[in-house]
Length: 468
Ligand SMILES: Cc1cc2nc3c(=O)[nH]c(=O)nc-3n(C[C@H](O)[C@H](O)[C@H](O)COP(=O)(O)OP(=O)(O)OC[C@H]3O[C@@H](n4cnc5c(N)ncnc54)[C@H](O)[C@@H]3O)c2cc1C
Image (cartoon, rainbow, N blue to C red; front, side, top):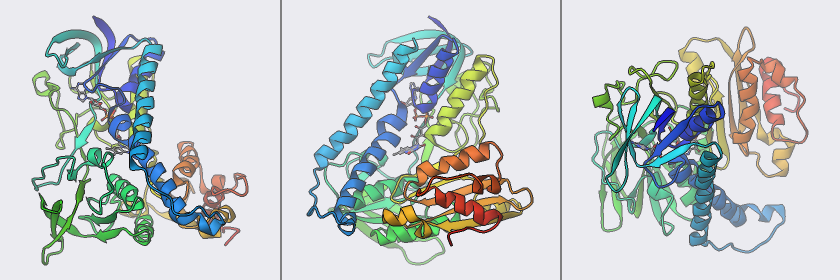
């Protein structure tokens, strides 16, 4: 069988590329080795983790947040099995949605492991060991990423006691104590889930701040809020060993700056120290596809590898490992393959942490602007001065706008607060159109909304806010 495009991997990069290419009139096939489509994101990543974040947040709100609003409901009871069933049902409906979209767009799908055989040729090997060869004008590698582990430390992840995010979204009881190795997005989200359901949570992080790449001020305030929620932090701590013990597992770490080692024990240890590109079994070496120094498939600005007709997108190439980055690359590549001008603006890719409050950012951090020697001005507005936030008892956090000192063009927006993950998009649209803080500050915002804090932070950037 011969296609215009064969895509290996059906995550947000692969399935979106497939749908867009089919919409543009190309004949498309997708190869996926999992039994269901949707990749890491829909099966074991974004979607199940958000189902648990939402459900555990409702539980936490019922536990602590309703009395002060005059709603007395007594102590809520956790039914973890039902919560997990909600998560599983959410995953099922999403992965089935992708299967439906494949059919609707007349995309052929093959379940099995795809291998690049060189220019225009791909093989698929099913679970039964049978292999078939397919031909295509273009081959897209969208094989995503996998758990990275701890550099230099041998860890046996059994997904029961020592777990990755995959095990952490499927625990059958609430741990008494969970140690989270790695204070990045996934670790803090999963730590929040289990903390809200009653676990003691200790985060062990190599850096001296959580959320490494985020704006420093946001990261500091976020840590304070999570500590108030009961999360314990061991920062500047280098993990040297993770082993099973009678109680569960032990984590040994020492101060990065030097000093005595410490060992702590818990019933569950989550390893959330990042993800690495997944290229195993793809036959890239034999096909001559070159990887970069970090094992990612090397591509040019049009997602083309060094082998003509072989392209790559998503987590398996350079850039932030985010589902929407993979999706946008999928769309851009489909457009390129259809003869159009596909493009992704890497300066405007939002990032969200789905905790409570949420953290969201787009564009440059203050630290990045300083390093790059860009002259900037900054405006901030706290949610404690926002009427809607007060009405909802959601006054933690702030909005910070960073704009070029001369041109006033907005270069970055950082929000910590309830609903930050939704609010960030007005900043993304503004930045996509090269807007200024004055444009944002002069745009009428509905009252009373949390988004008024975004407008006020913009006002604070080019002149003065009204409400503080
Ligand atoms: C717990 C967790 C939470 C996350 N939350 C978020 C979030 O809230 N927001 C966000 O933006 N991102 C989130 N991410 C990251 C997001 O999941 C990834 O960035 C995204 O899935 C990358 O998409 P992709 O298409 O590149 O690859 P993937 O989604 O990893 O899909 C790759 C697919 O390729 C298949 N495959 C691999 N090799 C082969 C082969 N040889 N043959 C056939 N098939 C193959 C795999 O089985 C997989 O299904 C989260 C990740 C995790 C783990």
